[in-house]
Structure formats: structure tokens, C-alpha cells
Length: 527
Image (cartoon, rainbow, N blue to C red; front, top):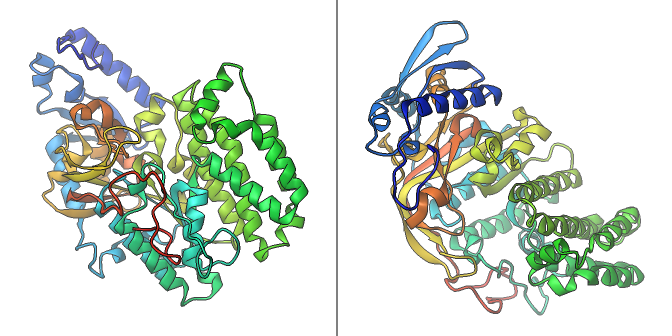
């Protein structure tokens, strides 16, 4: 085998014939997947990480000679050094994040209806601060009024009530006697950090100075709040229609044993012990059928809209936890489809032409069709679905990356956060290409009508390189297999933001709290 990692450290050396067969298969797959829209590969090689070190094949690829044939028939020779030079020439240096001119470098993306801002980890300060500054500019200067993030709806709604000073139940701010602390479940540091705190306070101050039509809201797209969303639906119905609330409580009762550990519901369902789908669907159906009646009751439909979204979330979460035990690809696709469906419902609830900025991981924001998750595992993600459903001309996908530094992460799920050293990027990665520019921070524009044709051709000569994905878990000892995956950067993103050396986010607390932590009534985070 060639494309594998032998954990016993025994090196399996492929024959020359095996290598040629691998190249032929790779070329055929690439052609079938249409990975070369502007060029046809006529001579290729294998990334070094796929060949055992010390083999003749490995040494022959130290300086690969890659040649592509453009559609006009003229050959275009491209070596790795040429790609590196063209990449560096296209990199636009950025000032310090807090420099007033930093965010203006992204003005050319402001005409898109959706701007998706990805991050290469969920624990890097620069990724949060940069996205915050870009978001502020999109709101203040370009009319964006939706900030939608990879977070659960009920938690994000607490923030939304705070930044828009919304009246109504469950806000627990502005005179209410008891605050609600959002984001108190693992991983708390993902949203409970100083960088996010600063953006939330800015949004509240900004919204206080503009009319309601220009206020920016804060919304959660994710699927992991089944128990909290059940409670929100029941609480809402108890207020507007107590009889319906009683029925919903009975229907959702089927899920009650698993609200604290919903993954176990999926296991019980697979074993034939319980299936709560009918009650969940009936509750959503009844809520939708009474939309006009309910939405007239409280605050111009805001409370109904939130309840509707929570009911959709329960429906999709019930499906998600069952799918976990059948296929990781199908559960991933269910999750990202839910997030895009949520985004569409948010926009439908807003005036026509509303523009949104979306925060999520690079693995969600980049187009999955141009990464191994789409090519090999047939998964879809937010970036792909947004391009397909809203049109590529209406969507900008921007990723963030780093070479080294520190990151806030845990070794295992539900463990406390640690500040860990990030290993220098691999030589066969896009991160190393960015690092080798020698530019501390830059933006590279990958849009077809902005990129240098020679650089685009160089990308297409060898489109797939490794890309690092660090989530809330970081395992540096097994970094290659745990955090790297192949990606075609040119088609994955419309822009790529680089910070060569980065620092961990500043969490509001380092330990996962057993009970919610509070600060005061008027602030939704708590310190």
C-alpha cells in the first residue's frame, strides 16, 4: 500500500509500477471530479507524505517537475519553487489587527450577501480578533445585520437579547432578577473568551446608536442543544397556548431520558429500544400550522421565530444522533445541512436583501467539494451548500491559517482547556507554502477574477496539498493523522488570511464549570 501510515514503523516500499498505477488512478479521479477547470494535467507526481522516506520514489520527488497544458494548447511549466514565488507575490501584507486599516483590506468582499469567515482552530486569538474586526466593518460600513456562528441557538439567543436589548422572556438581563450564562457546556472557551466578549460589547454599543432596522443580531447555527431547545419550545407554548404546551411536553417526554446524553438516544434507537421521531415531527407540524396565530402574540414574531427554530433543531438533532451510529459522513452532512437551513430561515425572517457574516471552522466554511471530506467521504458542508443554494456570486468563503504558536484546546472531549504549543506546519502543507513567503500576516485573494492567471495555473498543476484542521481537541503527537487533510486551496476558498505565529485565545475560565458562572445581570457571559 502507498497511501497509508504503518503504525508498526515498518516501511512498505511501493514498486515503480505501483507508483505509476497510483498516478494514473489519481489523474483519472481528478479528471472525473473536474478538479482542473482551467487546465488539464499531463504530468504529475505524488506528494512526499504519501511515499516512504528513503525510497527512490521519495528522492525523485524532492524537486518535482510539474507541467500543465493550458486549454489553448500552450505548455506551462510549474515547479514548486515557481508556485512559492507566485504565491508570495500575490500575498497582500496586512497591518496589525487593531490597526484601523486592517479591516478595510476586506472591503472587496462586502458586496456578497454572505461572507463566511473560517478559522483553522477553535482556540486561536488572532482568528477571533481578525474575524471580529472584519465583522465590525461589515456591520458598520456595509450594512450587514446578521452574525451567525457555529454555536447552539438557545445560547446565542441570550447574546442576541443582550446586543439588541430585546424585550421578552428568557433574556434575564435589563432588570430581570436572574441572569442566564450561555456556553457553559464543553468547550466553554470556544465562545466564552475575551476576544468574543469585546465583539459582543461592541455590538451592543453599536446597536444602541442605530434604528432597529440597522441593528445587528447574533444567531446560533449548530445542532447540539436538543435538551435546551426542548425546554425553550415548551416554555414558549406554556406562555402562548398552555394546552399545546401540555401536548408538547408529553411528546418530547419520549426524549427526556436522553436530554443530558443525546448520543445514547441514537444508540437506543439503533437497537430498536426507542424511536421518538413521530412526537418530534408532530410538535413541529403543530407549531408551523399555528404560525400566524402565535406570531401575532409577542414582539412582532421574534419569540415565535425562536420557538420555531428550536423545534426544527429538535427535529434535526433527533435525526443526527440516530445517524451517528450509521455513518459519520451522513451525520456530518445532517449537521451542516441543518446549519445552512437555519441560516436560510434567519434570512427569510429578515427584510429582503439582508446580508450575513458567518463564523465557523475552516472545515465548515471551505467548499467541501475541494477537500478530501468531499472527494473521498462524499460529505457536504456550509461553504458548499451556500455556494449551491445562494449562488457562487453571492457567497465569499474566507479561511484563516497559521504556522506555529499556541492554541487553546483539550486533549480529550470534556477535559479542561490547556494552552498547547502548535507544531510548525508540515513541509507538504499549504501552511508551509504560506510560511515560506516570510510575510508575518497577509491576505491572498483566490477569486477567479482577481487571481494572477499564472498563480491559478500553478495551483491547478498540483491542486491537492495537506491543510491543518485543529478543532477543540488537539493531539500534536499524532498531528498528521489527527489534524491534516488534503485540500485544493484555490477552489476551497475565495480568500485566505495568514498569521504566521499566533497565540491562544484568552478564556473567561480555564476549567469546565460544573455549574454556571455569573458576573452580573446585564452581562451574558460571566467571568
